[in-house]
Length: 215
Image (cartoon, rainbow, N blue to C red; front, side):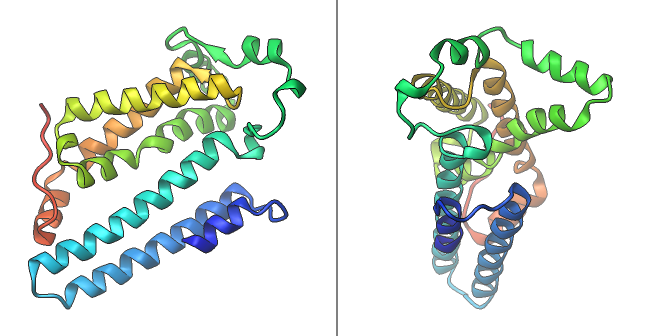
């Protein structure tokens, strides 16, 4: 995990997004596989729960650091608040990177899809949904109070709103209400996916989580 983050932050090493995803997926898969093998040899439910908890926390920290990098530091998306503010086009940023009208950008993306311009629109729609989707797993698993749907959604909305406002203050990325909508939708969908009986049964075997609730 540390090596992957080192590659991400090293100024002289440039890794394409596809490579980042492949390396990150491989590292996460290796960690999960190792944990599953370890748990399979443990008889004590408390030890199983501890092993899984540690792994989930490691994955969560890795994901959180990577998300912060993606949102605020990734030069590939023009997101770097490390350069002096005086060198920025303030007027241009506020004109082109702020949207407070719900569904304005989403409707434009959907129009582009209908016109055959799939790549850019798909990246914006599904990329924004995917960015916070892991929260639908990590937060309910790690924090008992967020295992109910509405407390989870309210927390996610507050979290993403804070991120969007911070991007506005730092003038990195964009401050877009449609990002809030798509990010929240992605997290909510993942929350419901992990409410499926198959996942709940697996969690139950690990003695790790009680059933997530929809109210």
